[in-house]
Length: 148
Image 1: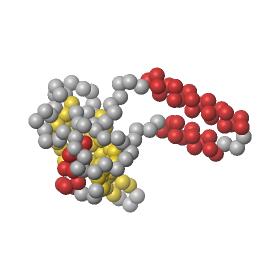
Image 2 (image 1 turned 90 degrees about the vertical axis):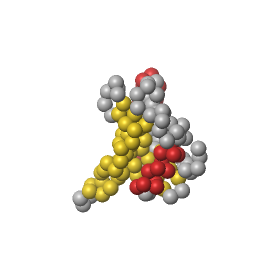
Image 3 (image 1 turned 120 degrees about the horizontal axis):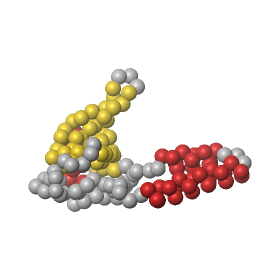
Image 4 (image 1 turned 60 degrees about the horizontal axis):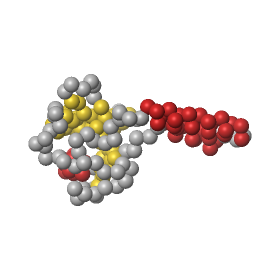
C-alpha cells in the first residue's frame, strides 16, 4: 500500500421524527502497520467499541480524488454482513416486468433489462470489489468474527 487510507466509520442512528442518518463515530488510519488485516478484524473492532447496528465506512487516500464507500453493512452479535452492490435500474425493471400484464409489455421490459446488463458489462472494470487493502469475504452472507 503506497499511501495510507483514512477511514471514517459512521453508524446509522435516528434523527428527528422520521429521519435516519449515518453519524461519524470513529476515524482509523489503515496502512502497512495497521492491526486490521481482514474485514473480520475491522468489523470485530467496530462491534466491540460501538455495538450492533448498521455501519458505513468512507475512505480517503492521498493522490486520489474524493471519498469512496469503503464498507457498508450490518454488524450483529455473532458476525457481520456486507451489502451486495446491485444495479438499482435492473432491480426496478425486474419489478416492472413482474407487474406487466401483456406479453408485449413484458418483451419490451425484457429488452431494456438486457440492454442495461450489456451496458453494465461494458462499463465494468475499474470498480472496487470490497475494502481495499483488507482480505475480504463474500458479500451478502453472515460471516463470523473468527474468520481470519
